[in-house]
Amino acid sequence: MLPDPDAAYLALKARDARFDGRLFVGVTSTGIYCRPVCRVRTPRRENCRFFASAAQAEAQAFRPCLKCRPEIAPGLSAMDSSAALADAAARAIEHGVHAGESVSIAAVAARLGVTDRHLRRIFTAAHGVGPQDYETTQRLLLAKRLLTDTDEPVAQVALASGFGSLRRFNAAFAQRYRMPPTRLRREGAAPRSGEPLRLAWRPPCDVTGLLRFHAQRALPGVEAVDGLVLRRTLRLPSPRGPVAGWLACRLVPERYELWLEPSPSLAPALGGLLERVRHAFDLDADPARIDPVLATLPQSSPPGLRLPGSFDGFETAVRVILGQQVTVKAARTLAQRLVAAFGTPVQTPFAGLDRLFPDAATLAAADPADIGRLGIVRQRVRALQALAAEVAAGRLDLHPGAPLQPTMDALRALPGVGEWTTQLIALRVLGWPDAFPATDIGLLNALQPALGARDATAATRLAEAWQPWRGYAVIALWQTLETPA
Image (tube, rainbow, N blue to C red; front, side):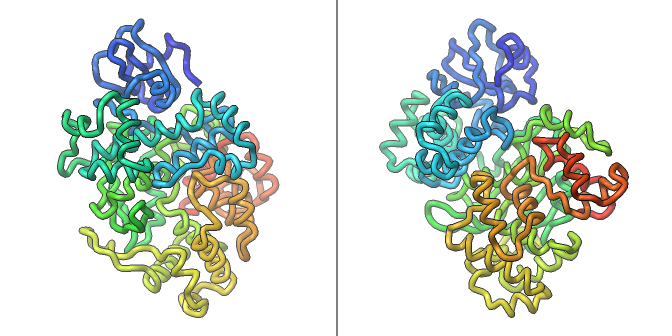
């Protein structure tokens, strides 16, 4: 929802980063729309038109600013939309666009259990534009980012952003932005060598807590945290087939930005990589909505707390299963053995980062006895291989754009996967901000002073006051423990 126009203009004048990604301003004198943090001279009030999304601005024939770059603004979190169903559809569309996949609105509706017509109606009511206009905006903003931040040929940009042909891409780009793609590069938007990709967040952000969480779980050979920088290896799907490489993420608190340096080998999958980085660092969170709820916790939490996500949904789900009934340290040790036995070597410029986490097909085909010899008990071997088989066969998607309830039901149906595991995967992989693993021992230890006992039922009752942000409450409570949960 938008603030009233006068309040929106005050936010624009103040360049208030809390409204970034929630407020866009179209300037009638230029035909351009901007983020509220744009550093150009503030336009006159009578020339401003305010929108809740980039898609709404483009539907009114405004084109994106080349300076503040609306494509790097924070997006929607899972609880942002007034209609949860419409928001789930928006996330599914965005995932398909960034993954380079075709997006069928009818298929999205079917996955969400509603008719195509009903989805279009509620989507338009919630987001101000229809789902196809929303999809086109996401594809064009991704294309603009690829044109600006990479030297990929225009034909490859068209393919990576989901256009079936270069002709269709050129036509859509020229219609929306009133210039051909090649002109965007000619007019100073070409990539500069060595410059990182920028991703914005809404302040405040608990950078210290976020990086501590990742550092405590960093898997040797795959991931490392050094100060404000996280580096890791990664394998990604792309329109050209699977690609592998490395990435380095530097958090820059004074600019409310994350600077991303990917290896050149990941360029064909840049859209999917950007989506995964946003999810891993929860860059789309809105602290103005979350912090007031966390203020009611028994222990204080830092402002701008983030819900750490995952770079690879399958990897994180495997590690959640390995963490059943053991400590974080023990689970990391088991995961390290799994990487040593089944991971693939990869070259990086960083000492100690030289392995890719094993993919689903590899673990599904492995001899169970070989996995068991790593110290993983039989029940968890069975759970890991059941999960891997479903993911490898394409029957189970593990990413924030996947439909929540059907995915959780599919997880519960796997052998050795109970409610604790399902809730943790929903929290870290599906990005569900209201996930609550009530039986988690770390959570119960943190709540014991308030409850007087380690009681999952009492914890669930207490947590009702923290809906729909119980997942953030879990992270906040874990932070109060001396030993990571």
